[in-house]
Amino acid sequence: MAPQSKKKKPVSKKSPVKKTVHKKRTRRKAKKASNFKRNIVIFLALFLMVSLIAFGYFLGQENSSESKKTVPVSKKVKEKSVTHTKKITKKDTPKKVPVKKINEVKTKVAHTKLINNENIVLAYRTKRAKLVIIIDDVHTKAQINTIKALNMKVTPSIFPPYKLAPDSHLLARGLKHYMVHLPMESSNVKFNTQYKTLKTTFTKKRIQSRVKEIRTLFPTAKYINNHTGSVFTADYGSMSTLYRALRQEGFVFVDSMTTGSSKVKKIAHGFGDAYVARDTFIDNVHTVPAIHKQLRQAVKLAKKNGYAVVIGHPHPTTIKALGSAKSIFKDIDLVYIDEIYR
Image 1: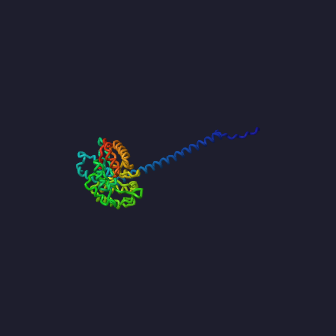
Image 2: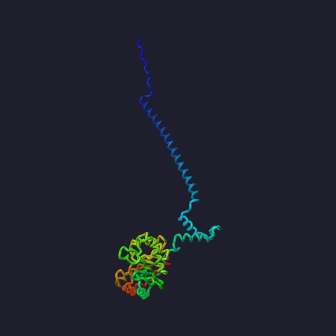
């Protein structure tokens, strides 16, 4: 009897390689499913977060709109709303709000902006240019008479009373066109010894008191310029205090420009005022030809800008040069300082 052959075990149809590929595919599918679930969770979380932020913003808008009804309007907003009323005509004005009442509100706003309820502005340009000649350091009657004898429009700037001229303020009596020449702190210490020179160390009250004193001494004066003052005019705080005090007393400040660091222009524009400053000194060199040269330069500036302001001093040479300079002024108008303002 032939020996029985052993039964062979059935061989799996899938080879080991195919098994491995199958497992990898299964893992990929599981991983994809897991990633898909995670992405859905992240998306839902983001959606919920955005929804909460949007809801919070909506509530904030509601609260802010409610608070606007109770919170007082700031000063700037008030001014803007009143400025808008300027465009309202009688035709457009609601019947319940009389035009008179709107005008009253506008006046109140104007007072908050300006101390004297009007800005300092330059006069309109004319066909001919204007030249202002200021003579500083005036403190004697003889100097006033010499200036008058020139028979031309020259503006004297008079020192307030001091040791050498205790009654200098009386020189302004009867003068229609003049200025006050106010001593102010200089970088040169020897110039700071003049009586009651304004200094940057002065308190606000002391500066205001000095301005009130100047108003009492010169009741008809309108224009003031600085004597020296390179330190004082360059100090924004002190100069701001002075400028405000001058404005309150009805003065207009003309910058002698004794320093390029002067803050007067910035301060004047802050008040909405025109800024006027000296263009050139005419007698730094005390000879007639040198002064004439400076005057010609001033005339050129006047023709270019519409006006120019020059400063000289009551030296005999300066007076002589002015007296012989009429031909230099033939194409422009000599005017007093108050004629370039309106």
